[in-house]
Amino acid sequence: MARYAGGGKNTVEGCRSIDVLRWHKLDYLRSPRLFSWAWTTDGERMASINVQTERHSVMLKYRSRSYGEDWSDVEQRIAVAWTPCRFGGERPWFVCSVRSNGVYCGRRVTKLYSAGRLFACRICYRLTYASQQESVLHRGLGKSQKIRMRLGGSPNMSEEFPDKPKGMHWRTYERLRWVHDVADERSTIGLRSFVERLGRRFRRT
Image (cartoon, rainbow, N blue to C red; front, side, top):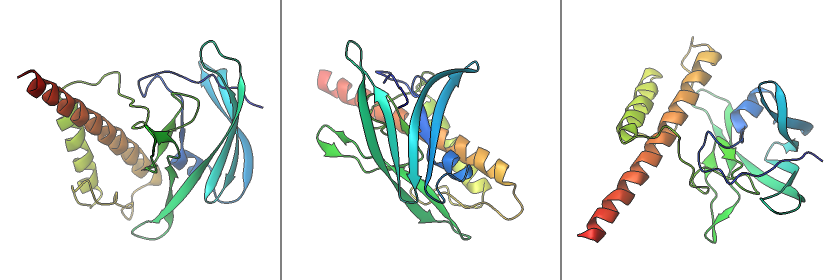
């Protein structure tokens, strides 16, 4: 059984993560598969988990412990949702399966983070970015919209991400998608922080 020491981290950069698009690119989701997934630092293996994949779910198996506690076995099943792409094919999403404040999450996300005993989305763990600044809200939103329009889509963030344009290399498209997702996440975090600060100002007046 692989071992993993769960986090208590409060930033995206401080947490290990799993990426459904990366596993899809490695062809791990096409048919049932068993494999070990590891995280390394400077070439040294720091943690690992065992993974069993099927088309509509993945099972994570590992050992976890919090500070001052003993190791415990964890089995976490995570649903995988598929959505059609504009020009054919499908793309996968992880469905966050945890409960935050007693409420089931169910968000479709690309990445899940290990800030505690279970893997969950950054919203459930209230993860922020280490380099977050006041201007991140507007800068992140603008960057996301420019990428969408570059790919021939709409700047409307509520619409599906545009499919790969004809003639564009998949590597370029995936890099743009990654940059878009990071900018969008930072924009969301910046907006939430702004609203919280605004609420505190009103409460003091």
